[in-house]
Amino acid sequence: MTIPTFVIGIAGGTGAGKTTVAREVADTVGEAVTRIPLDNYYEDLSHMPLEEREQVNYDHPDAFEWDLLVDQLDTLLMGQPIEMPQYDFEIHNRTEETVTVEPSDVIVVEGIFALYDDAILDMCDLRVFVETDADVRILRRIRRDVLERGRELAGVIDQYLSTVKPMHEQFVDPTKKNADVIIPEGANRMAVDLLAEKVEAETGDDDDPADTRSWDRFEESDRTTVEPSDPEADSPSPN
Image 1 (cartoon, one colour):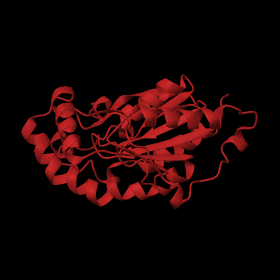
Image 2 (cartoon, helix red, strand yellow):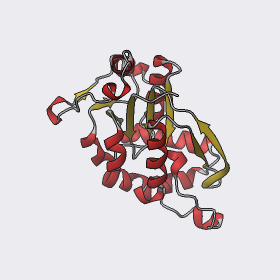
Image 3 (spheres, helix red, strand yellow):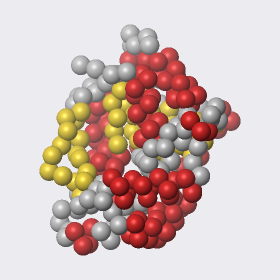
Image 4 (cartoon, helix red, strand yellow):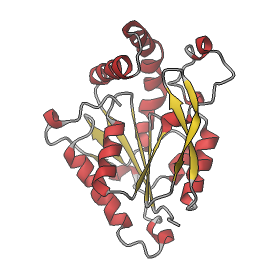
């Protein structure tokens, strides 16, 4: 049984590059990383017809089932597997399938509100906020929703202006104050290497998992901003 020793929360606006950072950290560290996408924890809206689900504000914190996420993350931290729900963006709802997720040395919780909920924040050993210019984020959002999720361009733009942008300003951007590390302009090699180095340092000597998870929290004055070494090399991920 693996008892996770390190939990990272990675937040940021839509299209900021959160998923890219999470994936690259996981790839750099290796198999000992479990990714928990916050998108999978949208509320189950099976009781609503598709027409009503299409009108839901999915960029508001109330759109998520926080209790389930907290319970499942707590289960992983106790070294037990979970059945993680799966979300289908085309039908705006969960699927009937779940995925069995085994605990590993490192858990990464990734999503726009990864640094929003107090209970999740308390579980995180390292809190990361990925900050990217709004014009870059909207372009990535359009590409993702139109090309990957089959949405109409007009609908994507309308949703961005009516809910995504105001919800980002009201709820997502303020969570930046909870971050230990701020990564500007999406994923960059320096940031990924520093995060991976931190994770490997914290999990390298895990003779006592309880001690490994007891590292001191950052103070406000210790917050780090990792500048990209080569802006042109930043990943164009739409996540």
